[in-house]
Image (cartoon, rainbow, N blue to C red; front, side, top):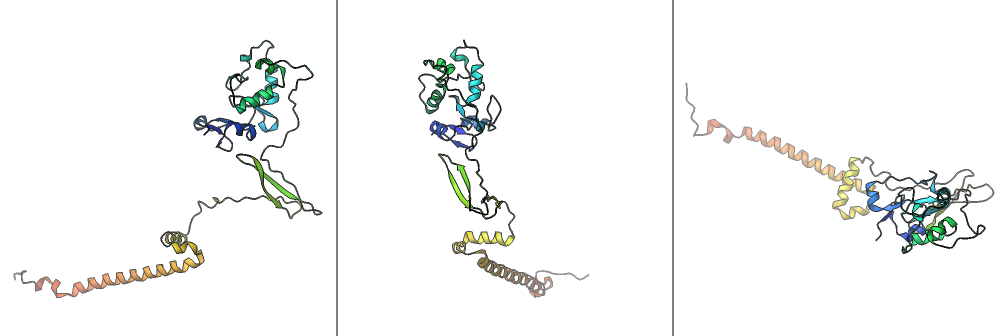
Length: 272
């Protein structure tokens, strides 16, 4: 079980998942997330969204635009020692230790091996100037999980494609047919929308009865309401009977001679 936590989907991730499915996500330890759950999905160097360009993750798990990391490292003096190439967020060395074996470290070495300043820090042979592959700042790619909307035309039936970002891979959630020329179908199905809706007394009584009568769980509200009305009527009749019994009992006790103190031989009332 890994203790690394991805801040955006709020799930635990291993290093293989970071390399394959969470390349541009903010990942730190779970304990650090418990202490401070705030995060910024922006490059620490240029303050632009991480999804705008290709990214690289260091062994400290901080993520940068590969072009920004290359620009920052080239701005350092040429005689800078390998330890001087440090993460601008935490200060850890950019280059992974030689004895570190992990998917993140292997992916970082593959990326850094394309440029000479990193090959020198990794102890690798330098490339020819024309063989060096510098990062390119191209057009913004489509972020993972972004909704792709295709409008339908009167002449043909198009589809609206909704991919979603899963824990293990990005897959297609649904393909919905659009019937209006300028209408994009959006699906929202949240079962918790009416979680805190105020319930009527009859509906609350229905929930209470269903907890005591198993067969009532299979019945609809339209059938159960007659049973509830019957019980309410029965309770009302019983209450009226009890009320009249109490009233008539008090009246009979007042007319009963046994409760008259003058008929008690132990009580003597003197005449004055």
